[in-house]
Image (cartoon, rainbow, N blue to C red; front, side, top):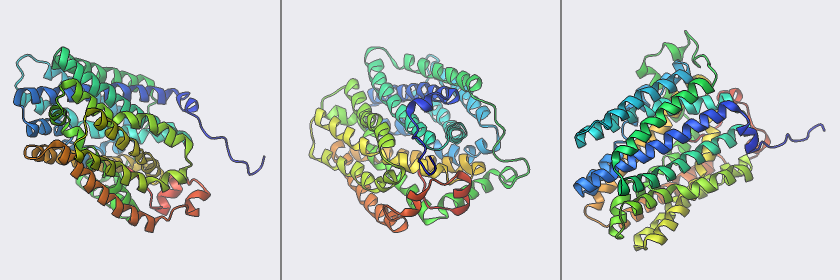
Length: 431
């Protein structure tokens, strides 16, 4: 019938796309393996040193290298075929993780290898995020993003819990062997399960000709040159405050008289609820409603953590962490709006910058939280982090309401195409 709305996409439609299935499975393997290895190394360091600061530094070593990768390597996925970039990153990380298994490897060397391994994550993730809109379109992309995000969180849950169990009953080495194997399988899935596509930046174009430094500067101008984009980038970066419990999970569990399994439970609880709520958020709410709920959910995800300052027991703490992480689903709406408004030839660079801010910010706050936990209770540190994030979320939400009033007709009227939105500079994005 003329004027009728097209049927909404379903999760079955998304999984019917073979390329997406392979990309999704590679994400499952990589995320679960990475989290398992990171948790195992973090617990290993805490067991050896007993220091919250050293433990936080180890955890941050899995994050801080994003400043190098985000600045200089993420844009490679615009200038080179994205499938080749992902496969190369997986192969390099396989060898780096395998080196961690060498007997007698000093503690500082393990942390250094973790640092080097993480440096290849930004180009991989930028390439993966940039190639997904080439595989899925329209509402299929929205659901695909929700699936990837849910997978990422579920992988964190499985990896975190597995890391705690592995250290409790075995040792750190088996975790690293599994991590290396996941990179191998991921590379095979991407190489043989996705199509070969040319580089997004055409030979001779400005993006292809620019030096890495100039390319990075152009990416920053694209992301931060618009008030709406800048506001939403900062809203996405609020994640650095409501993930503070991850950085000091071991000391927090220790204060509650829990061991490595309790630590894994704390880390798993920060992702479990989001893995459940994200598909519902993406499937039930309309695109405009998802945008309208971003601000309130950003406030709630941080504000909920203030309750930790009252020193609840482990069960109540896990409940609070789960509720807080569930409110973090606002990131899905921001991510979806972002991708359709960034030109394809700059997409990987833009994703790299947004992700870099998140990861580097987390590294800094984890170290700061670890240092603070040396003098104050971990519960107080988490509560203060939640309060800071809540206040920033209130300010950013007010600014976003000024830029894009709730229920605005321009967003509800139609879903613009990637080309049209890149030209019109509509102020919506997400990390």
